[in-house]
Length: 210
Image (cartoon, rainbow, N blue to C red; front, side, top):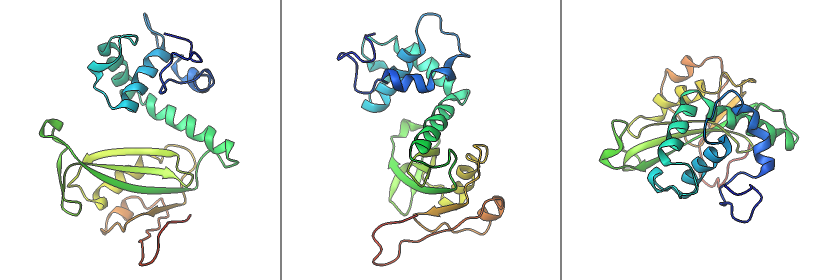
């Protein structure tokens, strides 16, 4: 493919400087016919455009090859490592500690088709049949973890599994501020190692501040 600084690159492609930040993570992998940057750019193209894997442009490797490596990286938790490295560097650039002391959790339910598989249910509050995305980020908005599950699984059930995803990422966050109240007697007990705070959006309150 063209140089990363060439005008022919896709907007979703990494620049040379961006690739330099994460290149070492791929050193342990062997790539016979395709360099990891090209494969990663193909993944980013799918994520950015929302296109099907089979619709990858011809100047990328075959979609089967790209998808194979994407699934392999998922299994090896490499994508989480990429996220962690980028987040830490971004926090340091903002004058913060590499690991956050505060985390924010929010959820979003979306409709999915029947072909989406077993992780599909109805969210009675949002009147949506599909999946729910449970996201946790630091106070600066940088991603910590994502858990996707059936939309009929309520926040009390899902929050522990989301929080457990960040326990191995270094410094433990000191607080969890939710956009909506999480009810349920057991989920705090199951993660008693974390001091948690649950915030509700009160009347007349437009924005959340940390």
